[in-house]
Image (cartoon, rainbow, N blue to C red; front, side, top):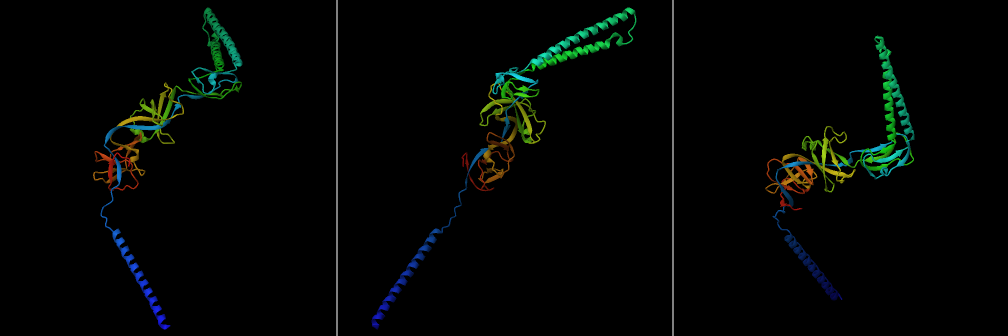
Length: 383
């Protein structure tokens, strides 16, 4: 028994020995492979990264005509609530008084009951005739008195003896009666409500059968033959205009750019708006072509004076931080804070920096740009 047990133990130790050797060999191989992979990955890279591509446009200083633009609401030259000048019941409403109706000047709109005003005219006419009769009597009395003193060969002691004060009273009474008659006739005429100017009835306020008093609104009338616009401009923009501004022409266009003709500048300046602290241009435009509508919102562009040594770049060329980035001859980035003169048609016109004849301006500067950074400029791309 003992010899057999010793042999079994020897075989068992041999197996464990071979297993240990195999494990050690495997670990050694893995270590060698790992070191080889690390050696392959570690390689010296001496090539610098490629400079970023920058889209540029090349611009040169030039002389331009300043363009001052702004938005303005189209307003009718005349717009009013036509109010009753007399009291009474509305007896007739004509088609011209209905909302949306286009009427000419003096077109009939409404009629108010006339009875009391016809009576007032008749009374005033009678009082005028009585005043005229009293005036004739006073004139005759003066004539008789003068003849009496002439026949007696005496001088009148005072004007009262010639009945001159009575004559003056009669003259003033006749003038007063004439004025009262004109007032009565005016009131009678006011019972016929007419349009003071040509335009569009935008609202009918009073109705048939309604009793109105002086001052009550009847219809709202808006002129459609001529329009007015007012544009606010900053003091800087005001300095870009040619002066005096009165009589100059401005172009009108829709917000999408469609042209609508021109308007004439009637006046401008003279005061600052207390709310915006800006100056204001007042324009007028006849509506012969019927292209304008009251309430529309238009772009107004006014040509200004000529300005030399300027650059015109896209609006996108000025970064959110307010810098203009440009590329020098060595393809290095530089930045400057531009002196913006005006904006027009998606472009910005600014004073050209000193010391250059041409400028390679970045079209769309990035927030990652750094002064002195090397770039690869490409002309006219969208990158």
